[in-house]
Image (cartoon, rainbow over the protein chains, first blue to last red):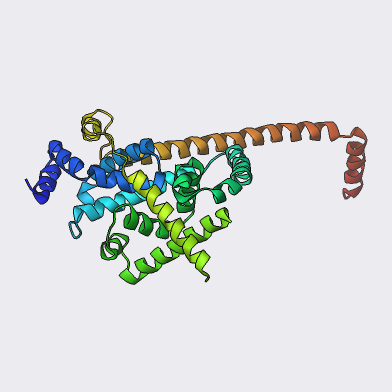
Length: 189
Length: 110
């Protein structure tokens, strides 16, 4: 059965028709979630939540866009909602993170300058810094960045998913790149 | 923009790309589709009636809160009225009562 037939079958009440859709788009949704949460376990949980939400909301899928576009939007919204909830941390956790950052920046900054680019990559602190820099982007910049870098998606498709123009997507990507370079350049000075 | 900053920016973007490539190599749970289908088939699968159930739950909470508040206000008023009566009794002065009586008697026409 093709995609439209599968959707018709699901809407008719045949839940088994949903399994091929999950198997087809599972990796795609997982990569998008990974781009937001940077954790395999969280990405697995979010992927499951995305497909559950998509199944329950299948009636609202108007088929004016592709199913993949619709799933991308659900994945992005689910990931962002997860991050907003996760950001409501206790003040003690914030203090711990703050003190941890101070120690790491003072002890490792000079070491980074002496290492080559490949050795820096092995360093978990470098990876953590890069992930935090990505996390610090605004929602729109982050969405455009994740779709561009993790899904290697053309700007036209990103614009369709974000319901905006190609020019706006180009601007978002440029600003994301500039912000990332600025943040990481400040750290490595 | 000098040469060093351009080189630094390029190195930074290369590092970012390598971190992203490493994340992209992660594979999702191979049993994900099975788990999802199990959840959809299970008794805890969310149905379309959940919206009404949630509205009902919120309404019950609101009504309970209103009952508690109104009950508390009534209880407080009952206590306040009781206390005021006692204060009036305590404040009665026999001397004043007699004084008033004399005034009233004086005003009566012959």
